[in-house]
Image (cartoon, rainbow, N blue to C red; front, side, top):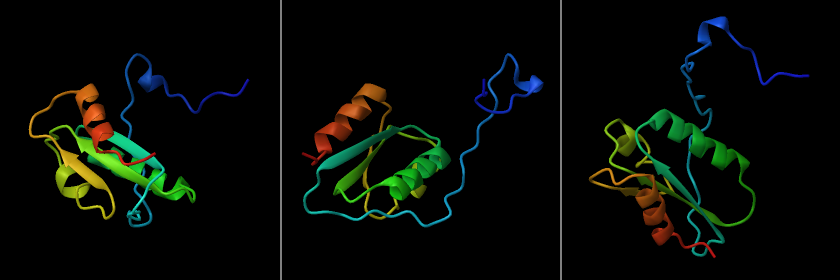
Length: 114
Protein backbone atom coordinates (compact mmCIF):
# COMPACT_ATOMS: atom_id res chain seq x y z
CA UNK A 1 0.00 0.00 0.00
CA UNK A 2 1.48 3.41 -0.97
CA UNK A 3 2.28 5.87 1.79
CA UNK A 4 1.37 9.55 1.92
CA UNK A 5 5.00 10.57 1.65
CA UNK A 6 8.37 10.12 3.28
CA UNK A 7 8.40 9.86 7.03
CA UNK A 8 11.23 10.81 9.30
CA UNK A 9 11.92 9.26 12.67
CA UNK A 10 12.87 12.72 13.92
CA UNK A 11 9.26 13.94 13.49
CA UNK A 12 7.56 11.17 15.46
CA UNK A 13 5.55 12.69 18.28
CA UNK A 14 5.84 16.26 17.04
CA UNK A 15 4.58 18.31 14.14
CA UNK A 16 7.20 18.91 11.44
CA UNK A 17 7.76 22.50 10.39
CA UNK A 18 6.07 23.16 7.06
CA UNK A 19 7.22 25.72 4.56
CA UNK A 20 5.13 26.87 1.60
CA UNK A 21 6.44 26.85 -1.92
CA UNK A 22 7.52 30.17 -3.37
CA UNK A 23 5.27 31.24 -6.27
CA UNK A 24 7.16 31.22 -9.57
CA UNK A 25 4.89 33.76 -11.29
CA UNK A 26 3.65 37.15 -10.07
CA UNK A 27 0.22 36.87 -8.47
CA UNK A 28 -2.64 38.96 -9.81
CA UNK A 29 -6.32 38.47 -10.51
CA UNK A 30 -8.69 39.88 -13.10
CA UNK A 31 -11.41 42.11 -11.70
CA UNK A 32 -14.73 41.19 -13.30
CA UNK A 33 -17.82 43.41 -13.34
CA UNK A 34 -19.96 40.37 -12.55
CA UNK A 35 -18.73 37.25 -10.81
CA UNK A 36 -20.21 33.80 -10.49
CA UNK A 37 -17.97 32.57 -7.71
CA UNK A 38 -16.53 34.30 -4.66
CA UNK A 39 -13.56 32.66 -2.97
CA UNK A 40 -13.27 33.80 0.65
CA UNK A 41 -9.93 33.18 2.34
CA UNK A 42 -9.80 34.08 6.05
CA UNK A 43 -6.22 34.59 7.24
CA UNK A 44 -4.27 35.34 10.39
CA UNK A 45 -0.52 35.75 9.95
CA UNK A 46 1.21 33.13 7.75
CA UNK A 47 1.72 35.53 4.81
CA UNK A 48 3.85 32.98 2.93
CA UNK A 49 1.14 30.31 3.14
CA UNK A 50 -1.48 32.83 2.03
CA UNK A 51 0.68 33.81 -0.93
CA UNK A 52 1.12 30.14 -1.86
CA UNK A 53 -2.65 29.63 -1.59
CA UNK A 54 -3.34 32.60 -3.87
CA UNK A 55 -0.76 31.36 -6.38
CA UNK A 56 -2.50 27.96 -6.43
CA UNK A 57 -5.89 29.60 -7.00
CA UNK A 58 -4.45 31.67 -9.84
CA UNK A 59 -2.79 28.67 -11.49
CA UNK A 60 -5.80 26.36 -11.20
CA UNK A 61 -8.74 28.62 -11.97
CA UNK A 62 -10.75 28.18 -15.12
CA UNK A 63 -12.87 30.45 -17.24
CA UNK A 64 -15.64 31.12 -14.71
CA UNK A 65 -15.54 34.78 -13.59
CA UNK A 66 -14.59 34.81 -9.93
CA UNK A 67 -13.29 37.09 -7.23
CA UNK A 68 -10.88 36.42 -4.39
CA UNK A 69 -11.64 37.96 -1.01
CA UNK A 70 -8.88 37.78 1.61
CA UNK A 71 -10.06 38.64 5.12
CA UNK A 72 -7.11 39.48 7.36
CA UNK A 73 -8.09 38.97 11.00
CA UNK A 74 -5.63 41.54 12.44
CA UNK A 75 -2.41 39.79 11.40
CA UNK A 76 0.75 40.98 13.10
CA UNK A 77 3.16 39.74 10.43
CA UNK A 78 3.74 40.97 6.86
CA UNK A 79 0.27 39.88 5.68
CA UNK A 80 -1.21 43.38 5.22
CA UNK A 81 1.91 44.62 3.44
CA UNK A 82 2.44 41.59 1.18
CA UNK A 83 -1.07 40.27 0.54
CA UNK A 84 -2.84 43.62 0.61
CA UNK A 85 -0.83 44.74 -2.44
CA UNK A 86 -1.73 41.85 -4.73
CA UNK A 87 -3.61 43.24 -7.74
CA UNK A 88 -7.22 42.16 -8.19
CA UNK A 89 -7.99 40.76 -4.75
CA UNK A 90 -10.49 42.23 -2.33
CA UNK A 91 -8.47 42.71 0.86
CA UNK A 92 -10.42 43.28 4.06
CA UNK A 93 -8.47 43.93 7.24
CA UNK A 94 -9.84 43.82 10.77
CA UNK A 95 -8.24 46.05 13.38
CA UNK A 96 -8.90 43.46 16.10
CA UNK A 97 -8.84 39.67 15.90
CA UNK A 98 -12.48 38.56 15.92
CA UNK A 99 -11.90 34.88 15.09
CA UNK A 100 -12.38 32.54 12.17
CA UNK A 101 -16.20 32.61 11.97
CA UNK A 102 -16.34 36.42 12.07
CA UNK A 103 -13.71 36.59 9.29
CA UNK A 104 -15.70 34.12 7.18
CA UNK A 105 -18.91 36.10 7.72
CA UNK A 106 -17.19 39.37 6.84
CA UNK A 107 -15.89 37.88 3.61
CA UNK A 108 -19.29 36.38 2.76
CA UNK A 109 -20.94 39.77 3.32
CA UNK A 110 -18.56 41.34 0.79
CA UNK A 111 -19.00 38.55 -1.77
CA UNK A 112 -20.59 39.40 -5.12
CA UNK A 113 -20.73 35.89 -6.59
CA UNK A 114 -24.03 34.43 -7.63
